[in-house]
Amino acid sequence: MKAAIISLGSVSSKWTAAAMKKYFKTVDQIDIRTIEVNMGGGELNVLCNGKPIGEYDCIFAKGSFRYEALLRSVAAALCDTVYMPVTPQAYTIGHDKLITHLYLQKNNIPMPKTYLAATTEAAKGILKQANYPVIMKFPQGTGGKGVMFADSFASASSVLDALTALRQPFIIQEYVETDGVDTRIIVIGDKVAAAMKRKAVFGEKRSNIHAGGVGESFTPDNFTRKIAIKSAQAIGAEICAVDIIDGPKGPLVIEVNLSPGLQGITKATKIDVADKIAKYLYERTKDITGKEKEKDKKNLYGDLGIPEPEKEQKIKEIITNLDFRGERMLLPKAVTNVSKITEDDEVTISVDKGEINIKKF
Image (cartoon, rainbow, N blue to C red; front, side):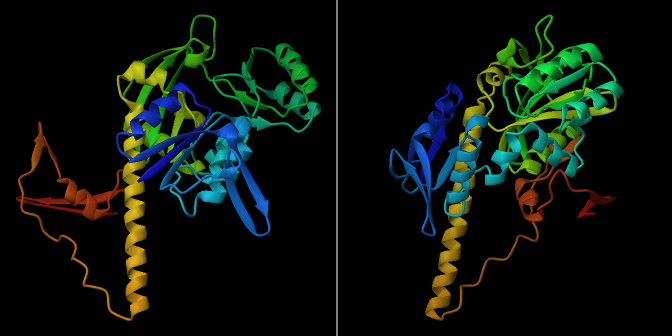
């Protein structure tokens, strides 16, 4: 299978491309700045250095918010014929903090109170009623850039004057005291691949590694893991980072990052995140490619006017030994695959001596 990674050529992207070469037959690294999308005449073409980009089984496209329109256009042009782990709309949602929070709110994901003001007068009205301190930030920006802290109405007004002069929209958000600590979680598919706690340096509110923050390995509880996975699904990304803080009533999502750096979390957790991403891309591509082949085969049978061969029956009974972890038993992987029950499902369990029945609620 042939894959490509479209990016700005960061260290994280190079790590991911190198890991992908262990799984895919061919992996091309493409600089996003050499990409263009041509539209017109009923056609939508993606070009690289002025030539058609070629055929791939998998394309992982990533980049900063400055390339949001291009990334969305590339995904929209190719997603029907190539496996891409990020949907076209996710590039718009994930690269705009305001739209991200709108989708989090829509999916009932906990987050700090967030406000958007259309005018300076409306913003001052919000600031007069706010509980201080507050966070003021631009909708676009990564690595903690464009995030400002105001501990009073006077300081918030000063920041507001500066933001107004820049003629950019901005977000006002309640400040939750965390002692400069947050959690970064890497979500791959429907699993948490790695997580770390980030601690801001003395005198700094931002815990981002690029802002001097220090990371250490962390194992989130099941509720926090579900929130992170649900956040990724809400914006339409199979691979992303979710940043979470501990609020008074539980975890709160503050950001979803479509192109997270891997150096900090790899160093903190000793987990090869790039390899996990590469392996996931390979398995998903193989699965999708297999389904496409089955679809083509089914169409072929139809075209020839002959019936399809009988499909194998699903496993109804397995004779095996159970794997015990202390006083807990683990079910075989085949049972999980056939039952289609996930960790997000609620189940009913009935137990009798020598018998266990589990049903999706």
